[in-house]
Image (cartoon, rainbow, N blue to C red; front, side):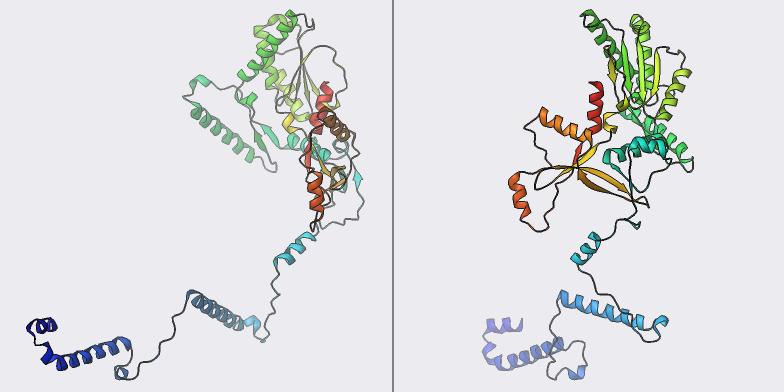
Length: 425
């Protein structure tokens, strides 16, 4: 304000030497005070000390890590276990490829790999073993078959339990599908809690369309069978009685629903009808017989056969219907890989060690079912190229790269489903 007033009045020129001199002194003193803030006031008039350069983020991080390491070393030095002054030697840190190399050469099992193994099949294991076998080799399909269907330790024989209610749902009482799902979920949890109370037995609860939508699901299938059968009779396709084969009948619910519907709606067809349920599981076959015997009306034309459908050898010359629910997706399969150079297929086998660990190996195809399937596929579709076997150009280029594999990726082939079709044919 003083300078502005003097500029306006013209008196700045006369007072300029004195005013500016005081102003410069005041400004210099202020700058010294700011530069020496936090220091001893006696040193304010001395030469300004040099400030250290500003530290960046990584500099501060490096100092923090160094101080932490130093504090860690000091703590270790004061450890009473190291009072003798000997510093514990740390192993050198391994690189990625060193760790990967160790994993690749790590033994799969602690068992002696030189123990001789015996070649077995699923049928042999079902007859000879009451516990999963050891020191054996078998086809991949036999290993899966034995794991699922062995009567002593198989999954479907010992662990699987089919969700089933005594009476079907009254679907007209539900407001919508969400209400139905809530009720079914509560019942599902209740059954699972009851299973958890059984100690020492691991169970898994299954639900199927046959059980959830009974009896209407079975009624719909029975209606189609009856209509198709009467249409064939009317067209003089055959004059055989109605014959139905059901494969893998679960609890026997579908069998009862089909028979009940045809008895109530087509009594003339029912009077000459035959129903055969083929079940591989002894436990389920017993349940089917119990359900059939405890029904209000015993169907004398029904029969339960405890046998694998793949071992069926009786010729059925009459026209018949085959019902297979929840079957094809539970069939075992085989595994095949191809030689990169020749394209020759190799069948997968499973070796089970003495400690129950197992690994897959490959050998030239000798199984007749695998050979038959590959030949039938080639004959039915000559232009078909398996996605597991790349083109010749791709394989030629791949062989030039380091660590090139000698076999292709695996291919799963439905050999048991193929055998099922052979039985039907």
